[in-house]
Image 1 (cartoon, rainbow, N blue to C red):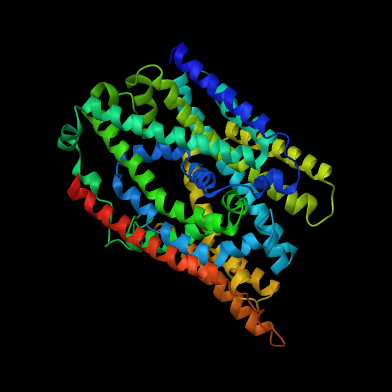
Image 2 (image 1 turned 180 degrees about the vertical axis):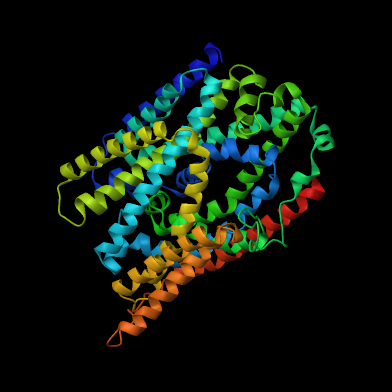
Length: 526
């Protein structure tokens, strides 16, 4: 990097500090955490996708596709369950969460069951999300250190402190509009890397001539993720079925995601945000996967390039390419793209953790003044920002193992938590005791699968199994223990809602088919 690149990075950082200042006058419950419910579908959609398209995706996914042993376009199978999950959320869950008028989605569980259910799931979210984001910041800082040429601790502070300041000042408004800008920069960075890589290869035809055809296999109908050595399978059925439950839980029961939907100016906007994410996430994933193939092929054809990437650290593929093969100015822009991805994930974490801590633990239904509430919001934002930055320092060399472990831990809880919200919104006669027993049983079954069954079952299946066990045990326990018949509450039928989603369901089913067909066709098209 030279002075041009550093100026670009400094200007970018200063711009985000100004962004936080721009929104710093907003206060109050809905202003700070929901942006006054003023957002349209476009900024919300980009914000949700920016959080998903994290720095790890920008760095690790192209490396997985391009050079990692056993990798390739099977990464695309992670997207198969997404459109189907969006249908379920748009029809059954998100409308009820939006109409509840809440900030923390776990408040919905207290209203339906009791406070213990709310606090339990809220604490699990706070611990797992802060630790996972700390690991993400560590991994990105470690990679940027080799590119920027500055000490590791300074890299963490650049990412953490700037994000903390603008998140602290502006709340959800700063987060959403910051994410929107970061998403545009990040996609631009992917496009730049793709075309520069093609230029180094001598064009698209030369790329195809040297491309490893084994990396084009994206769909595997034979592997069901059951049996010896199934711990890292990418079979069609586990990725679709397990992926449906994983994404339905992540987008529908994770505060960092649902908080954006609750920030929509109306229910139609929230529905459109789900639809747009169901449609656009795959094209972006396909784009950075193709970029990984291009840069990976260039690395394999260029010994001077590949020698700089240790066999056990394939994630250095994109950072080394940026550092050594892009002109100055573009280097700064691409470093900004990586910073954008990291800051987007971190800002979302800070705001959502602050929201659930304030709502679920500090306020918890108490009547407090706007001044006191705003004070809690600010203090918890600072607290979680500092915690996340500190965790990034202490993850150390175990980061890769921890990232894998966190993904598995997520799948231990995603299914049972989704089933809890499903029962809360769809089965009105189940009471809190039966639900808590079902929740604990579902989690324990998944822990058993992890510790005892191990690699004989692909962990994507845990999302389905945990949900089914939790749902079934809750219903069965309620049937055994209820002393008198509990009538289901009458549910209002929203004609506009179901008309809207009858159309969107067709669109998203078509999208699912298109995703699978494109993934199947790539080995013939490339």
